[in-house]
Length: 480
Image (cartoon, rainbow, N blue to C red; front, top):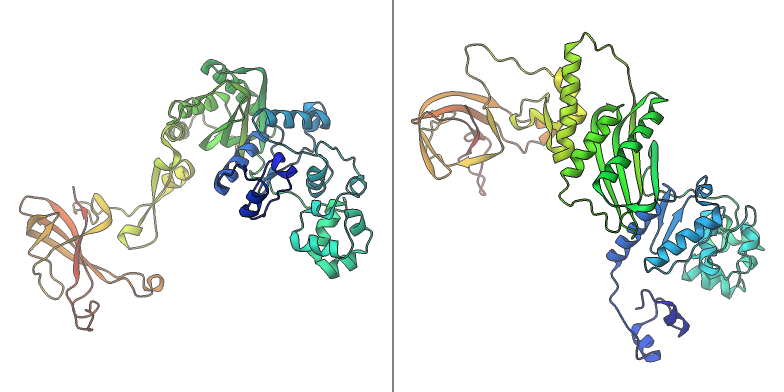
């Protein structure tokens, strides 16, 4: 089946959805390429990224279209006509065949694009602009289009002349809503690909920039402007994004996050410098960047505090700044803090959370106090998953092993503390987890292990025939 075709193929009478064999019978010299829906979607997404230079409100109109809400943006490009011409010419230079139109509603703009590319529909003139277009321009689907033609309604004006109730009864409420939006009678808001940032500043260049010095200077100036805008409303940035628009249409976005609201441009400069220096795929300017944008997608109100005499506040600020710098270089998910959890299950008693977002909580967390002159109850190193060990024999029913094999090494047990019985949370596990008996064990070489028996003898572990079986043994951690 034909998935897409160019203008020359269309002039030959070929159409989308036509069997390929029929198309080849009409044109034996037809050039055919396998359709790649995934690559098409990726290309459309890349074009949408590039269109962010005109407006931050860009939505996909799959499979081949885009919606751009240019409300309040057209005057920045010399008016609607200049903006439309700039967009079409720029995409044309990149090798794309572009059809575009401007209208008061997204559905009307899409309809006009299919029949009269380059048209700018005046406010209130939607119905007149599409009156003579065929009903297929609405894109309502083959079944509805065929039904309209069989009913003698060949143009959109013919359909609009009928009462809404009649159209709804015959073709459904969805088509009636589509028709109303195309005629300018109401409009459905588009769904932008990205949420609108709280603050946006950008710099356009008549001559593209390509050097690291110019990029750094541009980011520094944009940071000053951004901080000044946020300062007027008493806010600081928690998530910042720098977007670099290349002249060939490629867009590269760099994101940094902070643990506390940033209110100084020097901090933004340092974070982006760390991030750019640590990129595995360096920033490639190609033939240069013609626009750089800095946006704050998440902001918070800054609470002013008295810090001159509070040493702890200064220490916390320095620690938060250090975490931000490390996170900018190696990633925020790699810098973590540990938080206590209200559970007695060892592997769930600690939660690893990103330090940037949970630093204050970690500083105020209360951990179980260790009893003086007593050995620690939990090992210094706890395995993410308990590792099985081989126990030839152990004291029944709840005694420790006399020796065990772990990682192909035999360990003779000389000292034992335990057992510490830990039952699983039956109200969460549905009884699938077995009771554990933990032992603190020291072998003949002085190594100390934390091992447990998974299940009780003759009570929880059974074989396939229902007879009692031997429980398994595991090592869960190592003491210092």
